[in-house]
Image (cartoon, rainbow, N blue to C red; front, side, top):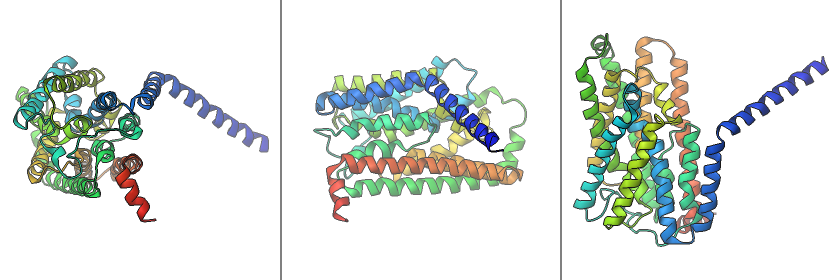
Length: 367
């Protein structure tokens, strides 16, 4: 009996070891990239002019890769029959138009003045290792399919005041709660009506409606979250800097569409009825309305990721309550997304304290 137990334990350990080896083999390119990027960060972070662009490049891809689930996740899921480059051109041109407007109207500022709020107004003149490495932690968490707040993870390490950090946190938490409640009410009230309307194959005009709404939503996301990427750069970009900024993100979007959203896309596709263009359009419409409200309130940066997972959670709960099934799995999905977001918040706060002297001194003063 004892030998049999030892044999089973040994078999389980062997299986785990084999699974780890298979995982490392499958992710070897990603791990190689992360290793090289950490190495380059360690070499160049003391040189501001190089560190600025290195941090921006890493942030540009990591932020868009993680946040793609919110804005273009349902768009990718419901347009899987379209060529990837067609979707890229549509989203990419909207991006260029939106940031160009901000750059022209706000005198070189591509963040729609989000970086003019308290704690973020000064462009960094020097960088800490963790400030440049923060996008790499975001990439790792994204690879683990965690919907982490890029606002917390990237912006928090640059804030020069606790008010700036708490302002972002308060606005983001309120965004999650409001989005959850609004989505729950909308889908509880309209579920039967939408179910009747969405029978059969969708008409062609639904695709046109979705593309319009998705384009508007994408533009609103840029208004809110461009600050997460631009925080590494001067607050007013000259023409060359602007071309590098916009071109890097434009081609990064192409990679996202080529990879069909990559691993983080599963967070969208595991939810109910998102591959049908009609429910996907309603999701984007409700999300757009919520972001319009928060864009109008003030220019304090916020986590649109928290708003989106609140929206998906409230919708999923409402649908399952109306169907009267799978409630246990639904609560599990909501809890998983929220826990992952909180993990990202915890990592962000640790990075912010470790990378920012003002915040670390303040924390130490309490002990």
